[in-house]
Length: 242
Image (cartoon, rainbow, N blue to C red):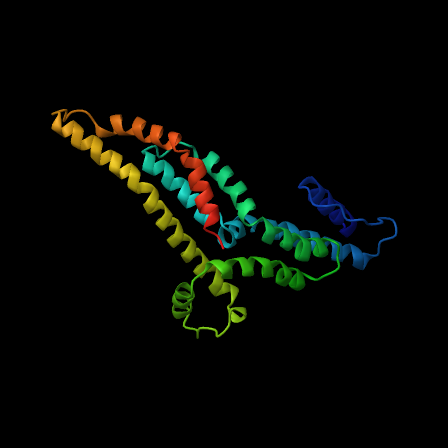
């Protein structure tokens, strides 16, 4: 059976392998209680890391960005181009740009002190959630909060500080979907206009057997490239955050 010392060394090795900042410790002189505390801290850290992708989606600007990027390729008529891996990577880096300040505060106030053993798990969660909470409150509407609180059958709080995270996160996600679909509607309009013009021209020429997408797709791609569509859309999306 693996002893506590061996389990501790294995946990530290795993933490170093995934890039966790090194924590100074003296193996020959460390006490059993200190070993147990460090092992529990490392185990909790590895467990919480499994929830990072979900937290990234639910509490940052990733939802709005990835929906808008997906609508661009659907408006162009190319559902698989750019591929999902490209959109996800671009969306991730844009998320870091738009939410970078909040994420830096999470690391400085919550994660780093927890790794150094200066605060408990509860304190780390409270300090880490504060910057993301502030970011989400700046984006969410009162109407979205009211919808979520009505669903949960709880009274609407009087001040933003009283809003619970269980209600704030779904309200924030509702707001992000609403804003993303609004931006997507604006993106779809010029593409729709090109499709209608091409269809009308082909119909007037009697070319009923020619699929309109065959003609409209290169025209839409050309227009999007000429006006620097990617730059305009990304600038607009990142500028929509408060």
